Image (cartoon, rainbow, N blue to C red; front, side):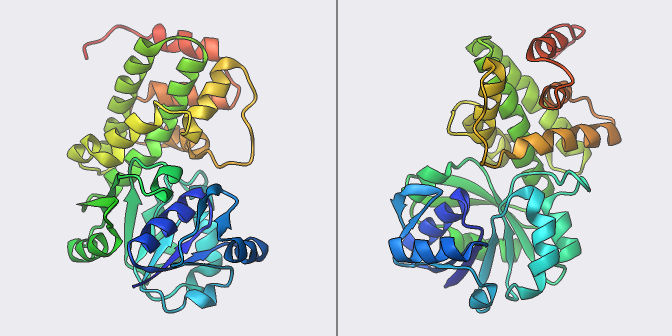
Length: 320
């Protein structure tokens, strides 16, 4: 099967490698013609320099080349999805569109499926999300993700084609819950990084993760997600992964904030924009999200880390 992966960042490259090792012919699109040319020649990627691209991966920079792809994975940053689809939707092949970014659009507060419904209405869509680090997926380490699709028959077909011996996909029809879990856990991961960076300890991180998970679920259900979804890979599983490892860009961002160091730039940290968007949605749906609010305030420099910690610790005592 021919699969087009749109976006040659770390995660897009990792998925391309996994799918090629699974026997598919994969076109890996980069917006940089030079990067595509270099990757094709060296069989390497600047985003995953220790990984050799399998033979089944063909780096490209012209979307016309992907005209006959049977499945399209869109792996551009969440804040760039709308811009990409507005410009390129007409060039995409008539194939199912699998959305892989984890974030809420900061301009419109839309989920990725809402953006696709507006800007690529002719494409059936699905969501690929869950706990998986790019470097591990690319190396072929066992990974389980969630594939969410409202059309169950299409979902089963995509699940069958996109699963490999090392990449196991679990099917859900709750695209709203799956997307919100994947997006909101980035905000909590920043908070967890702040806790560890500030030297507050593992007990504080455990408490933060637990309370953060509760507010993720509250907003998710208020927006139409299924509560059970938040107990699965796309939410709890992804939260556990990203709150515990500096391999997570969001956790690393929080770690830098908490310790007072400077976080290296040049990498997309989806939780930064999502924190602000989540607070706006919480206000709209009348949902309490104190952790997200503190993270957003720290990121916008309205408060210091110390003030944020004090704000959470001084909240009224309540029943769990």
